[in-house]
Image (cartoon, rainbow, N blue to C red):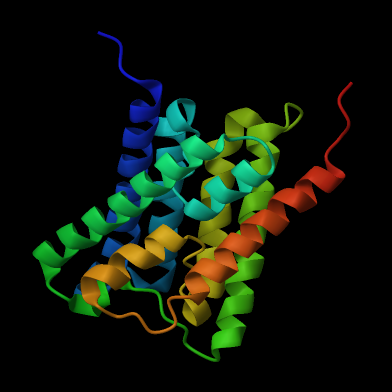
Length: 220
């Protein structure tokens, strides 16, 4: 019996986002308990899990695992709206489930990795916008341009996440992803400033996608 492709895509997005939050936010929680990972270790966990998931499910759903990426692909004509809505539901569901698992394992330690600004809110909002724009620029290059190094997509996207987490994480948390922010916030109950983890990444992803479209090489 054939499986509905959209269901398979939703399952992939659910599992991909679940893994991102479980490993990335889990690294924050484990570091709070043991001190074994440090900031660099946490950033690498985020980058590596994204790299692994893009490689594992990219051929199934595109491995968006991020509502901001899904929105940008939709607005640039790379994804139907019906599919986008299904992806969003799967991504948010995966993030919530992962945060719930972390709470079951560790309690509310480190607020389950909930992203929070370390300085002025507008500073963190600007960082989330800029870092997500950079991430989406790379994603557009490797996912939509045949002239780009598509076989390196997982490595390039994962490295971009890690680099952003390394330099921006101490200030904004480097969420770059509304689902990654929402899941831990919902389960931990820490809602302060969560709006900026939707506004910054959503706007940044759209700008990043449009910026790449503006400079992409013409078809030959």
